[in-house]
Amino acid sequence: MNWSEICIHSTNEAVEPISNILHEAGASGVVIEDPLDLIIDRDALYGEIFELDAADYPDEGVYIKAYLPANSTLAETVAEIKEAVTSLIDHDINIGANKVTLTEVREEEWATAWKKYYKPIKISDKITITPTWEEYKPENENEVVIELDPGMAFGTGTHPTTILSIQALEKFLNENDEVIDVGCGSGVLSIASVLLGAKEVHAFDLDEIAVESTKQNAQTNDVEDKIAAKQNNLLNGIDRQVDVVVSNILAEIIVRFIDDAWKNLKQDGYFITSGIIQSKKQTVINSLESQGFQIIETNELNDWVSIVAQKK
Ligand SMILES: C[S@@+](CC[C@H](N)C(=O)[O-])C[C@H]1O[C@@H](n2cnc3c(N)ncnc32)[C@H](O)[C@@H]1O
Image 1: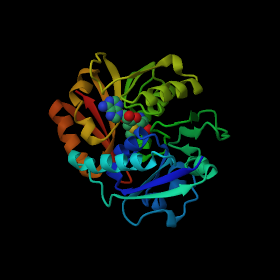
Image 2 (image 1 turned 30 degrees about the vertical axis):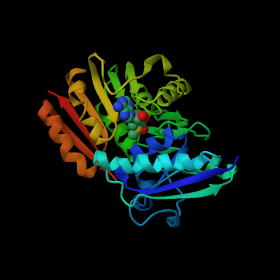
Image 3 (image 1 turned 45 degrees about the vertical axis):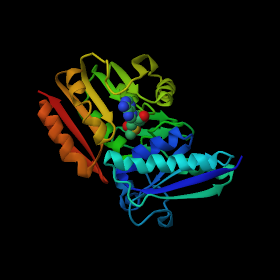
Image 4 (image 1 turned 90 degrees about the vertical axis):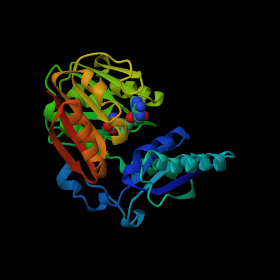
């Protein structure tokens, strides 16, 4: 089969909603080409070296690429994608240049195109994420290794927002904690929570494919007995008292369920949020504080921010 590579020139802020639009349109393996990846000292930060070619990257903004079957409905699919992306403006999301290009690619290129970016990555001193198809030998017996095949779900573990979330989990999660993961995607944060000592995790995602991916990846990592994954819209209808709520979703979505996160947390519990673009950081902090949360710390990677808040 022939495939077409769709490339959308947009902004960091629009990466997640556009990735969702592409997935919903049936695209496979979304690749983000962010020029900041060229500057960042990956070797020092995560012990991982990528072979990146500057020619693949825009001067400003990011390229979001995905692969669509080049069949008779391709033109309609691309038109729908363009319309959905443009309508993000109505949600106050900056879509930047919003230039869409289409290139035909051969099947072999498509199959490996996104995988070439996905290599074992050291998230912290303790945690390494490796794709299921790569051989990886832990450097020492304390290293926690998460094996992932995200398939069509978001969450290779390599995105800065996921890295920030895992680093916060490593710092604030205690042995035997109960955790809720809102917007679980591939299940990467749920699995990290269990491997860091959580007793049980309740993982929710609106997207059925993400729920399946979480279940599959939980099995691959032998933690399926500790992760209950379910389709759910944010925390609607959820009523439990946990130690940690973690959520890597856009700022616009986080502010919509801060009250539910508060209700579902024990006293002194932590709300770890990520997926927040720099310009929306203060909005999220203000909403958290007006709910009664105390901001414990904020962390930044590239243009992205994570916030750790505590129910006091
Ligand atoms: C940025 S991804 C994060 C995936 C993974 N947790 C990670 O850190 O890599 C956000 C996820 O939130 C999900 N999501 C978006 N809106 C949602 C909603 N209203 N309720 C539940 N999940 C939602 C998306 O389907 C997507 O899987």
